[in-house]
Length: 284
Image 1 (cartoon, one colour):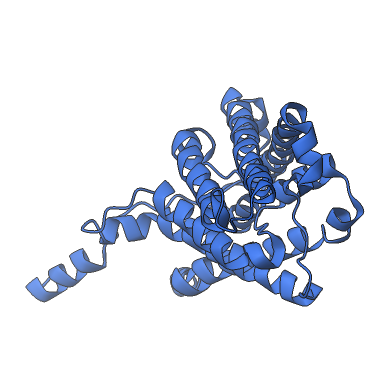
Image 2 (cartoon, helix red, strand yellow):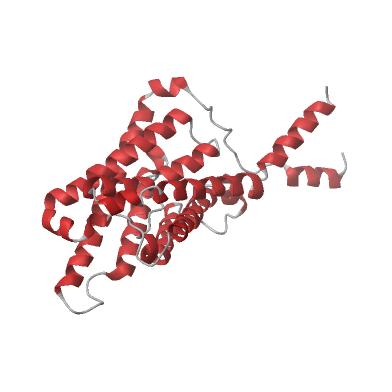
C-alpha cells in the first residue's frame, strides 16, 4: 500500500459511531424497567411543560385585561421564552433517561428514522398526551376562574387566517423543530465539528422559541400534538376541537419531512444502503 493510499484510507475511515437502526418491534424491550422509567420521565416532563407554559399564557392575558397598557405582563416574547426555556430545561433533565422528546411529533420523526421502536413510540406518545392533560388540569384546578376566562391556553386558528395557512404554519414550524433535533443529536456532526461544541438542549429550546415568535399570531403555536390535545381536553370548547386536526396533521407531516430530509438527503441513507447492496453483490 502506498503512502497516498494509506492517507486516503485513514481519511475515509469513520471517526464517529452511528448506532444501527433499532428493531421495528422489540418485544424484549417491553420486559425492561428502563423503558418504563423513560415513559414515566416523558409523562412528568410533559406535565411540567404544560403546567408552566399554559400558566404563563393565562397570566399574561389576565394582566393584559386588567390594565390599558398593551405591553403589560410578559408579552408574546415572554410566552415564547416560556415554551423555549421549558424545552431547554426539560430536555436537559430527561435526555439521559428518555431522549427528552416531550412531543409526539419528535417521537414520530425519530421513529421514522429508526431511532426508536414502535412500542416505545406508542408508549411515549400516550405518556406525553396524558402528561399534557394532567399539566393543564393542574392549571385549571389552581386557577379555575382565570383559566375559564382566558381561553385555557388552547390552540385555535386566529381570526383572519384560513385552515390552509394554519396547517402550513404547523408543518413548517414542526419541520424546523424536528430538523434541529436531528442536527443537534447527529453523531457525525458532533465528531466532525468539535470546534463547535453543542449543548443539545440549547438549539432545540431556541428552535421552539423562534417558532413561537413566528406562529403565535396564527395558531397560538402547536408544533406539539400533546400540548394542543391536553389543552383542548381540559378547556373542551367547540373552537378548540374544530381546529384540533391541524395540530396533529401539521406536526406529523412536518416531522416526516424533517426525518426524510435529514436521513436521506443530508445523511444520504438511501445512497449508502444502495452502495452497500452493490458492494455485497459484486463479491457473490
